[in-house]
Length: 157
Image 1: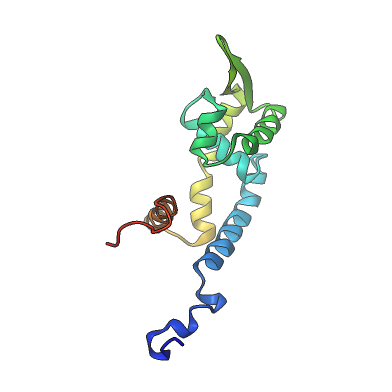
Image 2 (image 1 turned 180 degrees about the vertical axis):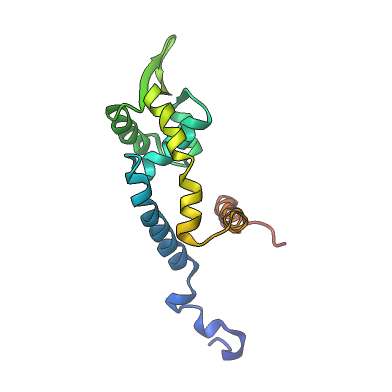
């Protein structure tokens, strides 16, 4: 039995679970993006794809899926919808029929200008400063790296 004074007595309380806090925070933040992205005609997953393409276009489906840490099969339906909306093109790469190049249309490139307001709007909605967002991002990236480090996790600091 755990010693009550060492704090482990409460380790299984829902409110102490990192996984629970991350799940609720993720759902809440993505939900807060919805009305902002609706004005751009994008869902949150589509916004992430567009962010990839605004950084570099054209890109292969594999490159996009790696950047977003998603399987290509998850990305493909998003790409079909973005193409139907007129934001992207999908074309086979000449000489490599297995590779699909995804590029921005003029409409998709122009959408970037409207999207420049999204980060500031979201910081305002969430009551966060740029520095706080940067710190949260760094913490999340540390968690992502820790999950990729294997079953024993990263070395302790």
